[in-house]
Length: 467
Image 1 (cartoon, rainbow, N blue to C red):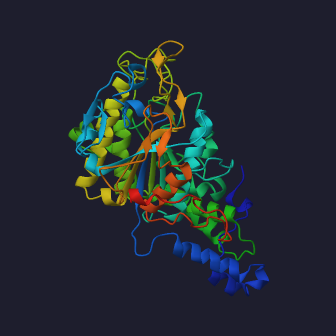
Image 2 (cartoon, rainbow, N blue to C red):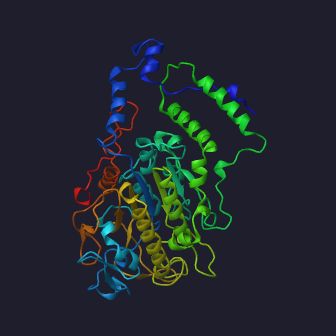
């Protein structure tokens, strides 16, 4: 086994350290590069703004826009499906009857009906959504990693948490969301929920990140930590993003073991039974309640996979709740785990409660809430392998955004008469992601590269009508 003393460590080099060691030029650094790096820190957030947070809910599989946010009541039955449109609290805005709670609080959110891209394959479309790009590179950081880079958590708590790991044959590669991409592991999320049944809705839910090896006492860990920091205090001549990331990651890990704030935030049992019932006793409901607890404690970004659980008597098949082809013994209009009558009311309850709860606690103005899938579903209902369903459709689909200064009671963009193609105001993944950054008071043009000149957080344009 290798000892701590067997390793060599380097640490990020600040302007002060560089001068102490003997000058910028002697270390092979340009003044221009160091000034640019400092400008990145000062320009990443809007002037005078306070840090904001985000709960990003992934409707993994792709929600049908025609049976949720973009109803077409005058279309033929094979297009519009069996559900009725209901009025929301916003005049002229209607949504599906399976979402009555959200209909009643439409003043709290906006709906985009003109999301569009070209990719109808789950894993690739999810990678695009995560990176906010139509053609992401393999090592591009996710939206969450970028947020935790530009707006690190101030408390001894992770900046980025992922609730419920993707599962199923169509999940994106783990490196697209469980690492920090080229930013490094310091900006990777803390993952909670490796399996479909080990989240906060389970009776024996426990976060193991706070555990230490039984053979190593906390005193011994602290001794190792002091030794490590002593080694890192030796001046180094090489400035590296990887070493910077490693140093931050080590600090975060050590802080986490000592953080009562973090331990308390992850303890969902501190919530009353009534509050837990209000969110819904299912995976999505309890994950969103936990997400609220984390945001309240200082976490910047919580990703939640919208797995709504199993109906009574069902066996687990996949986490792809919203991939409603009719291929998994449950039709899109049937009351089972992979059907709208089961999944959409649970989502309605959980998301509406989240928005109300954040508002009641004075957190909605500082917390962005995003609800979106990787694409939509085909306009025409078809026969899947086993049941009725709708297939993948990226050309036109819907998203919901709320909080953090998002204009409520608003519908942006328009689809055609079949919700098949965008009729007006198309929204690309780049523009969508730029809008999220802007809502969080982060500069979409902030540069992520060490030199401060390349790799903008987003190449899109924020949608002013949503802000």
